[in-house]
Image 1 (cartoon, one colour):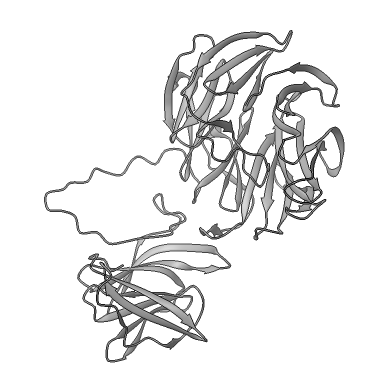
Image 2: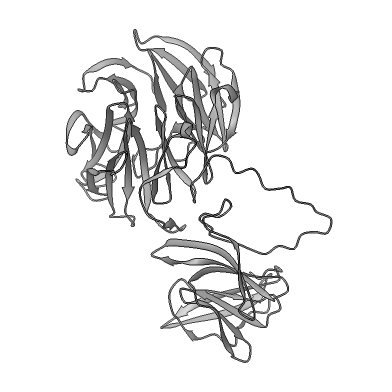
Length: 471
């Protein structure tokens, strides 16, 4: 689409050539661009016509090339570029440096180049408002419209969308794109990269960090390789502090291959780091799901199996939900079970919960329309508080848990210091478990309690909110 919104370009790929057409935005007057049929240089190229219809700009791994109707070709830049946008007056081009390979974008700075080839950097990738920039467009503000100043950039800037969050004690771990970071909010410093690289994910990519956990000085995460079926997944853990040591906890080949692993979920706290591995037998959609829960050592695996369950493929046999370092709460065949580090059952609470979190001698459970508090001493219901009526679920992904309710709108995030946190419609709610008071603490998609407050994942930032500032 041109910057003035009047014209658009589209194309089709022939043997060794890209063919570009242009048309009015309403679809009328389609015609081939006079310069179409140029040899294709790489699959990530972008052809965008100028608003005045006289030029065509192409961005690819070799830079930006300008073509005019008579067929003249001019190289404007030579650094890799994967996205561009014309200025409304057709005198300049804004673009994002970087490249796309196998649906993985390695983004850089936001720049502008004139038709004479003069460039300037508008936003650096590592600047406060930079990060993983994927798209851009020029706008022509309406006369008289005023814009407010940018919001204060508090918290930790991750450089890309934060898609996983975990915490234990005073330590926080977060995942952004394919990067894993460890952060101590009370230190006032920045996050330390534990693993990963500078790449970020395009919409078509199926790379993923599937799960994340912190257990004292250990950070553990799940990683899914590209592909839909089959794919490989791995569970890793790393000790904190220089030099960090990386351990492989588990590896498998994913669904739909019979008897292969579906993925793994993680829970951690203190000295406890536990993970579950799923496998399947029999032809889809029938067959059986088998799950084994392991307790990870501090020096990699082989690790001790402490629980096992099997069920029809449509039923989750055994899902680890939370641990406090001494106990693990599981969703086993649809009911809540608490076990010790050796797999011995301590308490069974026959309730079909979507999620549950340990809190001292209590268990906070999420069911449709309610937040419940059960006693771990006798299993009795202590109190319950109403929640918005909507679909409920736990904080998980399909590739870490095949039974994850990925479409759930309300998700229990954590419980601590007499509070419970849940997310709904892009906001983090905090509920007082003693009085049921429910208030919005921040905007965000994930939240965890630490010793001194709550951390919230909000876009590309992780924010810290002291307990005194919570509603």
